[in-house]
Length: 169
Image (tube, rainbow, N blue to C red; front, side, top):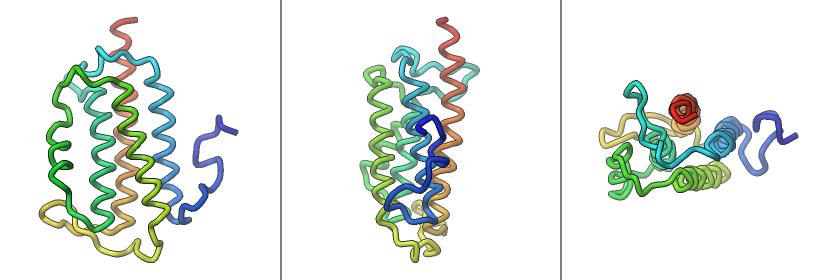
């Protein structure tokens, strides 16, 4: 059964029915990252073939966006720490390892799943402001975007990692 994609394994316990697709997408991304990057070399994290975003950037961005979007879904503004993390996404730091970045993403998925479990479906249509401009969205719009954005960057990351690894094979 574990060979099936997350969404085919059935409903996740304690996740409201309307939020199951968000949780499924995030957990699928977590599994795929662990599987496809298990042997990815740290020294290739910052490579940018054809000047596309590096694997490191995508890993930082995946965690950062989940943190930020779920913050907005709670109706909160970003903290100074979140703003600093945003500014550091993509800034080369050779001290960072693949494992640290994967663990950072996994931690954000864990926090997101906890938040989904505690999200009242009655609040899904409530308006939430995004960014300093407080651009209007809804709770469900933000949560759906977090899942969609995660899967989009995961796809880009997986292609980039494959191309970069080919340079050493």
